Image (cartoon, rainbow, N blue to C red):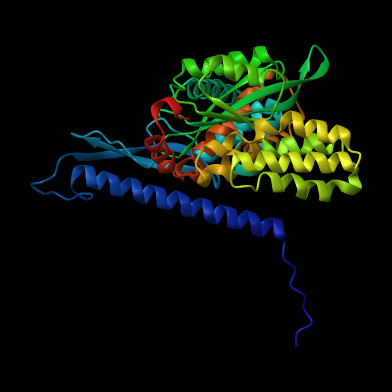
Length: 398
């Protein structure tokens, strides 16, 4: 057996593999461009047929930055027919994943010089300050267009609302900025991000302005608003959507009671509270709540019992809607999961230069998620709600 030890230079191997992938991407894209030219002219290179619709006239070169590095594209020139590629838009120079990453870095407050260094390390090409600035302008325009788009899905029976707190630098001092977010469930049962806006804080004025803005863009048919009982939000819902009911998030309600509960007794009390919302009717839940409140007083947890008595009714609103929807409309878990994803993405930023930068990055993430399976997969079967409407007289409808 040979005693020779083979040493591998990992850096060189990675570079060779990256170059191999880049060349493969380049060859594949150029072959696809040639195939498109053949389809448009109805003839191959140098082929003369009666059905030919145009002629080749050489090609011109374009650079495209991809996640594999810069590739050199040979765009066919055609006479008698316009060459329009479905692979690469006429003026598109960057793969969407590269562009989105640049936008996120800029919005996150990463310096232009640092963005240049990062792009060179990741994709083998340095992005110019002018390109970064142009992408930033483009991002703001696109995000604002999406943020202010008309809401055209018809009615939105269920609307979830919540606030996300991020840090911003204001006059050399750090302070919280609240980004108010609303997600709706359409009459067909699909989820849609309705909007996000900056609020100085979660108060009545901010919530009222936010809800009026959503209404002005087409939000209608709201039957139930699900949220935490933050200051002013309940009053704002009643003012802007007077026909809508309010559902207080059950999870947040439990947490509020836990603030008046000894740690050693939390598990026991948690089971007691869950038993209330495990009931099959509103009347049964009310009766169970009375029993739990009495037990809490016997345990000398008067403050916890007081919180239960004061807030229980707001947590039972969901029970007048179809039972098949209960588990998904009694908490804000759906929007909370979205908020956790946003916080994960913004955590690396730390403090934003201003509130608008925070809003733009939040909206960029919301727009991205809404375009995935999250927005295209049916969340609820709304036929049960339609059926319930048919069974209830108009004067008693939900």
